Length: 262
Image 1 (spheres, rainbow, N blue to C red):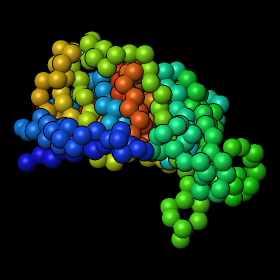
Image 2: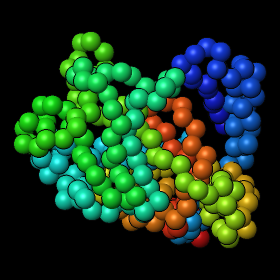
Image 3: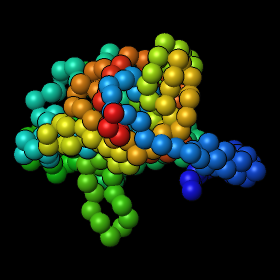
Image 4: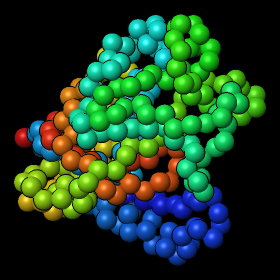
């Protein structure tokens, strides 16, 4: 058995995708996973689908929490204004986009929202603070606060995260891959915020000679987060704004894929 899902989220009802289209997409995503199997452990290029990538980026952003930086409990503590990723990577928090479901006029502390650049062409430009953690750390920065309902207080966190689109067509990410993995689902975020180690289960499709060959499940991605970020060698132009975390597809030149023993 395999499962698959799909959805459509818009600010305005008339912009929602037809229910038949959503249902057909969900069914197709489930059916194409049938017969999934693990592969032998090897180090290969890995392509992250744009709808699987948000889980990857969430693990990175949690490592940028300002209070964790103050307590020196994140591997990103000393990385401000240093390159942490490929120059192809720019990440912003932008809850000001017109008509977008992820946009809000005020953050969790009542401040007017604005666009903040977190990573600019691979260089880390800011950590994420709310007003309280910024005062404690003695820094003057644009704060970004979120709030989960009226009963809880505000806390530092991204509101509408966007990894910006690249210049490559999605098909070009596969073109020169003799053997690799196309990730369409992740079981967790992968990044250990304390050590920087990266490990997570995933599913997707094995790539042979630049094309999807068969569905894959029961495999693990392993490595170090900074090596993976710096190893991003292609970013597609297929960004689809759908919610709080948004990403185009991208390719990492090399990641260890752990599966069955040879």
